[in-house]
Image (cartoon, rainbow, N blue to C red):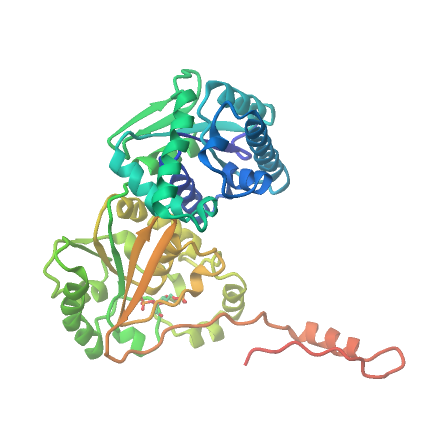
Length: 449
Ligand SMILES: O=P(O)(O)OC[C@H]1O[C@@](CO)(OP(=O)(O)O)[C@@H](O)[C@@H]1O
C-alpha cells in the first residue's frame, strides 16, 4: 500500500460537457503546482482529437455510433496509460483525469485500474442545470476549441447542445457510496462530500469549496518608495520616502478610474510602508500579517552589497536557487508561498480586492495567478509606483500594468549567472591547453561582473 510519503491521487472529473470540468482541472493544477505538489492534467478530449481528428459533428458522440465509441474508448485508455506512466516515471503526486466519466461502468473501470497501481481516486462531479451558465461556458470556451475551428458560432453552439443531449441519454450521477467524491452543484450553491479522509484530498476539496466564478478584478501594488528602498536596504519597517508619499496621494485617483462603480476592499500588510500607502483610500481595509515582506533574518536592514561581503556563501547560494534559499533566521520564497496560502484562498472567495504589499509577497501571489514556475517566481518584475490589474478568465488571467508618473528607485536584482570558483577556473584553463600544448578551441564561461 502507498505510504504517507508516496501518496498518489487521481482526481477523476465527472460531468456532462460544458459543466466547467476543464476549468476546475486547470485551477487545481495551478494551485497544487504553486504549492510545490507535482500535478498534471490528462484531458481525454485532447487524446480523442489526436486519435479521431477534429471537427467531429454531434453524431460522433451518439452512443449508437459504434466506430466512434471504440475510438473514444481508445482515447480514454491512452490517457489512462499515460497517466499511470507519469505517476511511475515522473513520480507525480496528483493527476487530474479530465473527461465526462458519466457512467457507473466507466468509473468502476477507472477505479479498478488506478487501485491496481496504488493510486487513490477522488471523483469530482460538476452538476449544473442552469441554462445561462451552460450557454456562457459554451460561448466562452467551447466555441474556440479546435473542434469548431472555422465553423459559424451559432451553428457550433447548436451542434454542441446536441452533443450534450447524446451524453445525457446515458449519464449517471455519482451515487457510488463507497467512492471518495465531491459533487459541486450549480457552481457553488451546494456541495456533497463523501468519504474524504486524506490530508491532500481534504485540501483539494477545501480549495474547490472556495472557488466561485463571479467576475472579479485583483489589483496589486507595492507600497510607495520607502526610506529603506532609497538607501538600498532590505527588510525593516521604514516610513515612505517623500516620493513614496506622493504615490500614496496619487493612488486613489488611479484606483477610482479603473474600478468604476464596483465595490472594493483594500488589504495591506502590517508594515508601516503599506499602511501609509493605503491611507488616502476610502474603502474598507484589512491588515494581514501574512502579507508582510519576506523575513530576511540576520540580513534585515542590510544592503545586498553588505550581505555579499558579510555572508558571501549565503549570497551565492541565494543566486543559485532563489526560491529555496532561506535567510539565516528568516524565510525562503518557498516558506512565503505557504504563508500566503490562506490569502490566496480568501482571494478566490472575494470579488474586487486591492492588495498593497511588498516585492516578494506580491511575486508569490502574482505567480499563482499567472502560473509562473518556482524558478521564475522570485524574478518576476513588480516595479514600485505601478498598479498591476489581473482579470481572471476561463483558463488564465489578463494583466495590465498602470505606471504612475512618480520616479522611484529600481529595487530589481536580476538573476546572476552561476559563479565560477577559482578552482573551476583553473581546471577550465588547463583543459584549454591540449596534450601538445596547443590552445584548444574552448571558450571560457562568462564571469559575472
Ligand atoms: O527577493 P528579493 O529580490 O531580494 O526582493 C525582496 C526584497 O525586496 C524589498 C526591497 O528590496 O522589498 P520592499 O520594497 O517591499 O521592502 C526587500 O525588503 C526584500 O527583502
